[in-house]
Length: 292
Ligand code: PAF
Image (cartoon, rainbow, N blue to C red; front, side, top):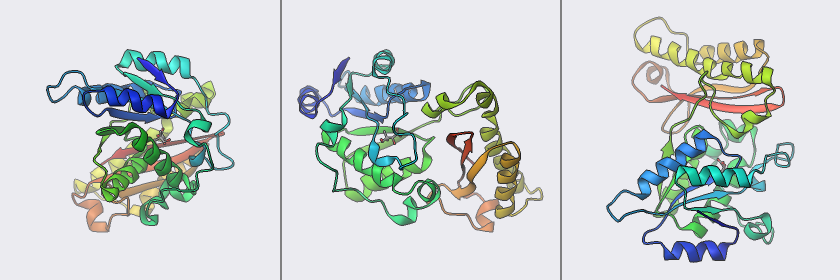
């Protein structure tokens, strides 16, 4: 596996490949969830009967998507360990530029996603986050020129924003979602889990439990059992997390197709829904979601 730090070398390497690569963008500090995305990318790259396709992963902690009081400075940079893990999972090339390589001058040109999607949920609590994500992903796509790219469903809204960007820009890239990897107790794997103290780590399972309770209530309603309205189910979930010591930003039941609230009929009908949450435990902010 090659580790490449410059755009010119990455372009030269990709140009030698027999087909356009399959790409997995990351910020490093990798865990089993990322490795599952790499294995998924490996499977896509090898489809089609032309032999082994190229899988490229990027590792870049993107300053543009962090707010002023967020964890940009303390986000773990663990390239040597990440590279070993990536090689074991079937990655061919790691693109790990430094800031001077990717942003040699202030990035004045940015990709701004539509407010209707990007100002909801994560966008409400992390202003500018999706502009930062879209800008770096657009830039990485221009550099890597992949035919497909794999993003984790744990960042549900991010996946949707990227799909919309690629569709509206007519870029010939297939955006593929990868299932959320979970620890044995149900906690969604995340690089930020590493910030949790041992006590917080034990407690962190409560976030996925909150999602399961909400999903079960919706399912019960759909099965004809008495069901509270949307707002009440969400408020109860927020309250319970608060009692357990979390500071929740949101627990919302949304339509999968546009992340807007379902109507009462949609809540109890067959509209595909997703329960999304973000909450802080101590200093650590975690997100998770569950499809209904
Ligand atoms: O999901 C992430 O790790 C980041 O948001 C991404 C897509 C690599 C862009 O920096």
